[in-house]
Length: 473
Image 1 (cartoon, rainbow, N blue to C red):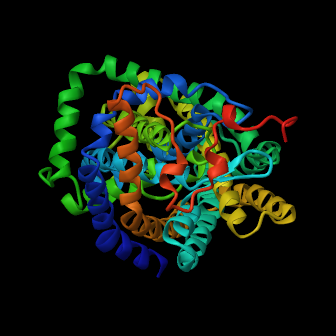
Image 2: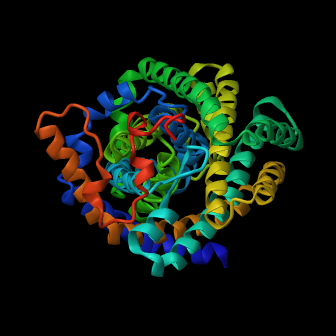
């Protein structure tokens, strides 16, 4: 029943909603993901700065990349190719290019409507911009979003990532699944009990290492088999439009798997990244929107394409073969570079998936905090997350996958509906950013007083240099 409902939502509703909303935001912003593509690198250059002990823009980026660049880039791409054929990769690209605009809009909203916490930190996300942007009459929608967020990320995705790691370690090293689950649970507890700042510090270290390491080995495979790349890209395009008879399911399966796995991987429009984007200290909401847009590019156009190349440059993938998930990627890399390749993928899966587990936990905590910031409830969630890591390691992949697909689809629909109602507010903020750049301002600054008609927490938008010192208070 869960699988049937999930398939109906994804096949008949969500694909159309993702593409239509994404195209609306792309055209209305005059292709912001293209206009500001090179500015993304300039924004990243200033994103490393830590101001006043806040979570920096770069830390927020790597935490969200920790979520986007996860097991979905290794196992998810393999699942998409297995179920939808190589053409699914093409539709993952399309979803990502459109999703860059979607991510920019939702993360800008997350920044715009963030609230200042007593300890000086920020908190925000779709639940906050739904309630503040649409008004208190829409609180029911914010509550629905938070419940779905808690279920999707705080529960099912944690179990799904744990399942991927445990299966990979058992295949590569013969480690029992229960042992992998218990070890991950212990390490997770040591991190999450330190809150978002500890999660950000850990992510700032391991995410660049894991992403660069995986990228280097993938590029090595591509260089070795460079002469085969034209064949691989032709194979992807032909399969995307149902022109390859050897691939079962045709164009429908390719589109469905491409969109579904693409969203699972880059999360554009899902409403997850704005929760992390909101905690960063930036001078203008658009800055973080641009940074988060770039994280979609990193995730899908770069990392997912690398995994697809590893798989399709090998002979391990055969249409209809019963090899799925991270195990397919492991065996493909082992064929390309030797037996150590399988072990390397397993270690990469561990780092990718574990960083995603940290990210998922924080999203679950943020969803819970919308209802209550009671320490007992939050500590209970931390213990539950540790338990779910162990539970997920012992489950069948399909069980967890169907549940997460259903709640993820509903979560995306709620967020896309909110974006459709709020996108004109982002256009106003984007126009303010554009006008400052046109006037010669190299680092635009957001003046919340210009948007007095919106329910903005003005204290959250006072730059540190504008805030009175503790002595003055």
